[in-house]
Image 1 (cartoon, rainbow, N blue to C red):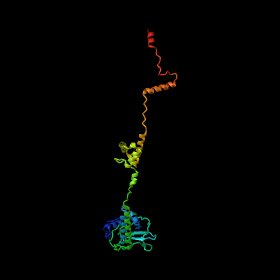
Image 2 (cartoon, rainbow, N blue to C red):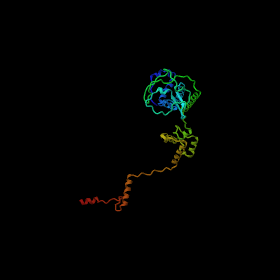
Image 3 (cartoon, rainbow, N blue to C red):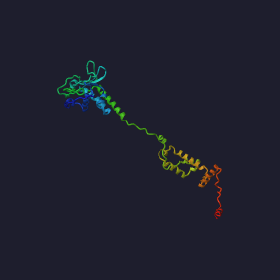
Length: 316
């Protein structure tokens, strides 16, 4: 894309006024799109990417394809196939409209009737301009047009070619299909009830064994076949939080609970072992010390003490 100049006379031109607002914008955009020799690739997708990068695909595609066709019919551009077999478009009378200082080396060929083929009916790029038909352009350097001139040739009313109409209809259909495909909402697959149940749930409020499970409990774990054990089961699982409180099969969970209850009930009651007193522990340590030291006087024998009478007699 290059910088070009638009003079105020552009907006007062009758030929430009005959165009729609969108076609005027497209025409101005083509000045920046083409090379310094006024020629650019006739690829609508490249044009719409440069001129309408933020517009939706459908709008930009229809605007570009239809606008190029109308500009060609009005004689403002020439669409042709070059000697290399590629499609190009040329701004008509470009050399009269833009004076480029230090122009870049052209990459694309200009239209030549001897070795180029028109791809769409249009006015000859070398048509004669009418006095005051189009505005003059400004001056500039390589990236800015220079010179004083009128824009393009006179307006010509032509009927749309059948091929161009068919092409535009095809583009519109393709764009509508692309929009429908992109705007179609994506359906989110809901998990099946079986998939949800496989992850487990918390114990439902007021849960109790069904008739079959109650019969199994009375037959296999009678110790758990009572309301008190069922309340303990509910209180335990409802007091837990997070994943610990989630089970996939509460009937199986109850059977395991009932089996443990029955096992505990079947174990004989064992009398608790008597707790050792402090005196018992002290006597145990003393007995151990005596066994290790044979010369030690047994603690259970009273030590010999002088007679109180002898002491008193001696004192006398």
